Length: 290
Image (cartoon, rainbow, N blue to C red; front, side):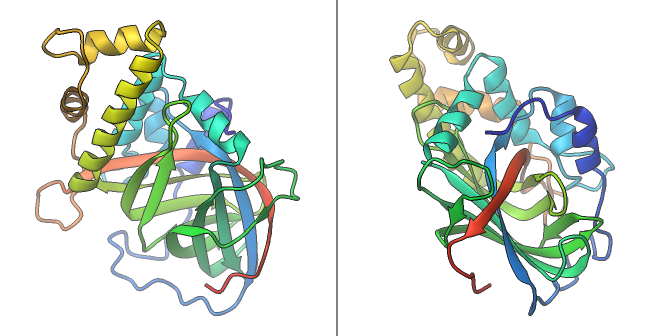
């Protein structure tokens, strides 16, 4: 799993722009990738921000105001702040092999290449060892991006990605579709990175409703847990002692700010989101075709 011990210095380095040969609005066509070897990295888990500083460091500057944006990441971090064992949820799914996330890169060189393709794979399998011997195969493809490697770091966009985040121990990961996704991944050095983008309003509503359902399951299964006491006192709007999905969604909407205007019409289309991750080299079970 990803450790919270990732230094803030590393987060700041990840927040430094690494790719500047394309338009920020994505109007330039992605590079055409016809050659290159395939390299796989197995993700250990997600790094969830626990403060606004960490959230901004992990976030991409989606609104081009000079600072990182991470509205949804901050909300998820708030759950952890209330005592929810988000780290344990990550560790359980990743450690069991029930959530295998692989980053697969096609590049001529891992230290410098101006035309690189990337895919995010999701699947299940045996519990990973993260020692370089784990084998990953073409399972569900959760996203595809294109970009360039500069000084051993890949910066990619031009695409959409589905991020699956375990929030509640013993429950499935919550899917968050990202439009205009952005990736930074260290390909030539200790494997780490960050992934972000914009969660459109409809997708956010669906995700918040799922979080609401999982919240209720968790509260009922763990009535004495510190998170339960805090959650009920904060979420139960009508003070009837019962938390509903609608109340979870209502509170989340009150805390979230739609902050990304994708089409430039002056109205926000969705909320920013980004998480960090650590990873390890892995073996490919077969040669991909992208």
